[in-house]
Image (tube, rainbow, N blue to C red; front, side):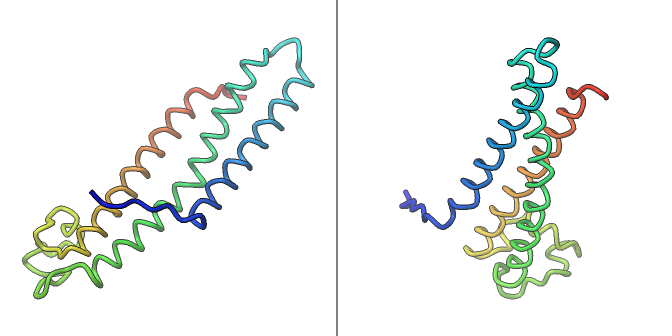
Length: 141
C-alpha cells in the first residue's frame, strides 16, 4: 500500500473555494429571506441557494478539469509511451486517444498519467450531467 501524504499547499485553493461558496450561500439566504420572508421558507431558500452554488460551481470547475485532462494528456504523449510507440501509428490505430484505452502501450509513468486523464474526464462529465440535472430543478423566472 502506498504512503499517502497531504501537503498543505494543495489545500489552500479548495478551502478558499469552500469559504467563498459558504459566504455566497449566506448572502443568498439573507437577501431572499429579508425580501420575501412571508412567501419563501428558510428551508426552501437554503435548498435553492445550495442548488445555485452547485450549479455555478460546476461551471467553474469544469474548465479546470478540462485543462487538467489536456495537461496530463500532453504529458502522456511526452513521457508515458513505451519506446517505439508513436502517437499516430498502427499501434494506436492512428488515433492518439487510443492511448487511454490500451495501457499495454504505456510505461509506468504513462499509466499514472492515464489514470489522471480518466479521472478528470469522469469528473468533468459527472459535473456536466449534474449541472444539466440541476438546470431542470431551477424554476424559470
